[in-house]
Image 1 (cartoon, rainbow, N blue to C red):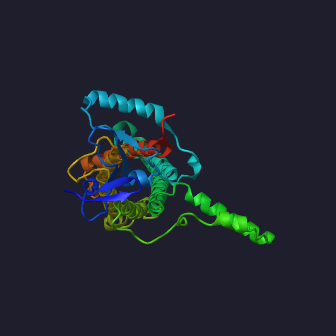
Image 2: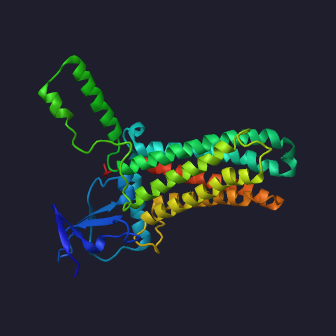
Length: 351
């Protein structure tokens, strides 16, 4: 018999706590009312850590009837009808940190996709005549893409530190601006001071680590991986590593950061996929976050292979290195587009 804890009119059942590993805090929790012998509905509200971090909060309580289960097809049909009625854009998109995370990675992925054309196509015989000029353009685009990924990685950390606050950074800036304005005017209106009292913790741009939060851990690894990977985009710029330098210099400062950074992308993506699962061995294909993590996993694998194959001077390895950048960039773009959809759309109450 599991224990229950009361939360207002709802109850938290220990059986509803799910996490991929015991190392991390629960990522799935269900609050539900007491059961009724006559088959009357039971109130239930679901909480997921990724949804909470992305600003998707339960807008209403769901009614679960303990009657004969509906056919799977009928249940899916009703669910799709419900989504069609309730899906809408989030308010104040420009102030939502999750939107800026998605924008940074989407723009970065676009830069990487264009870069991939300039990297891979010169390896084909029909395009080899433009090799040198295309390499310069590819290097510039790689630097832009790497910088945007670095920005996106940092914003992921900020999002994890301030989860559940949505546009809290705007409220924080507005409160500071009002305090400065009142100070200049010498205003001491008690009502204004009362209104300025924060009702929640202040927005932070840097904070202490929270290693038991799987979302924060994934964001931290993503940020560190992007920082290491960015080194390769800097050393890849024309003239940073002179052509006269040894192969070892290129291997250490150009290819190795790609291998380490790409491996970090893989680990971060795996953690984000696991966050959506109730157990490490149960894929959650119904979660958009799971598919975002999957495509980023494919992208990270492509970027890691690009660096790993780059050590070799064999023409086949050079070809596969460029090809890995190509399909890896497209995978990142698919994941970023899905992440943008997740950031701008929310499920609200039925009207």
